[in-house]
Image (cartoon, one colour):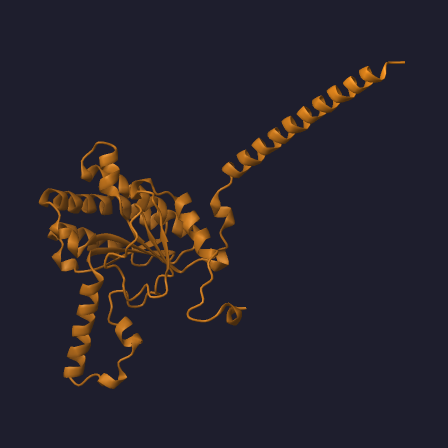
Length: 285
């Protein structure tokens, strides 16, 4: 028989080896779980029955992205087109009916002339290049804003693409061009005032619906989700009337780096929020 001391020593060694084995096995399992999670898309977490019907995006960070890569600002705008394509295709695949992108604000006209010119040229080129993709994905192109202020060539290309895609039904992609919400509301107010002056409208009958029907987004549901990239946390004169009850989602990601996975992340965040519209939680159950 072995002495008691030897037995205790063997017992301790056995326990140590067994413990190391458990730790090693747990590590392998953990690695496999992490790998599995990394292979899964956030798309799998999205509840299709709770998708917003309208997503609005402030595409911000092109200039900073270009600076980060030691390039001119226009380089950032060019690479931002890829993000537009990714997000549009993702919305169409998911079943989001309306996507509105803040492409060029009325305030953007104050930027350096060279940058504005490059942006308009890029817009013309992109519309030409992407029309076929819009048709393939059954996406209808739309535009809101002071479109008459756009350069003639840009305006004409835009109108041609809108005409070419007008029968598409899967998703409506709206570009806000030479747009600002204050401009839009001012235009709507003028139209309503003119109708009252002409005797076609009783001012006592003016309602929220009346105003909505005179906005550029007439016929579209209000956005339920507003996304802004680049870490800025402001609305920047964008769809001020329409986003009254929208969920706001801000991300540090610069627009050219924004992918469909980032869109899925925003949608998962949106679906985890409780939309009460002034009510209490108990009233929603």
